[in-house]
Amino acid sequence: MRALCRTMIAHRRRLSVLPLIVLVLAGCCGGTGGGGEEASEDSMDTRLSKWEQSLRAEADWLWGNMQFVSTHLSPNEEHCAEQSFKHKSVGIDDSTRKTDPDAGTLVDQLDYAETLIVQARSQWRAFCNDETTSSTAYAFLQSRLTPAYDSLNYANSKLAERAEQADEG
Image 1 (cartoon, rainbow, N blue to C red):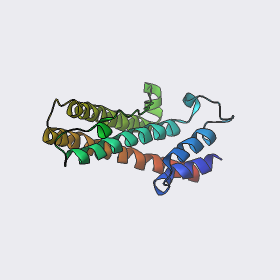
Image 2: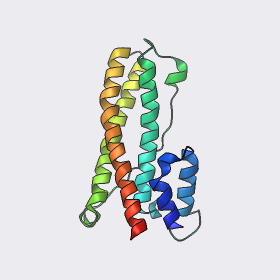
Image 3: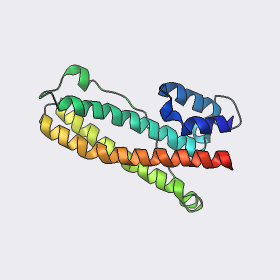
């Protein structure tokens, strides 16, 4: 069952139903018991993958808003409707960072991406509140989302590598 989960994590880009993947991962990668286990009992890589997916969902939403703002001078109600993204960041202690430095790097990359996404979301709100111009909002969103995607892509790639190595080992 764990091998199936790792394979799904490694190949999730090929699957088009992200919510289904999250549900399946939550049910099968949570350890030894049934579906009622807490997320804290998930493996480090599963928790990192869930964090990456939620950050990517918000980055995708903001990217779509950035595209909107590139062709519209003022906000509209539809695009400015609040979206809720439930990010569950992953902490790592010093001993884990020493024994698994790659996990530490992944946490750092995802934390950086989250910081950039929070900044982009703040700018999006400023545009929706008529506190900034569309050109300023566009430039700011692009300046934050591009490196956020770089970090998310790095994390996604490393998580896939770790899943493949676990399958081989």
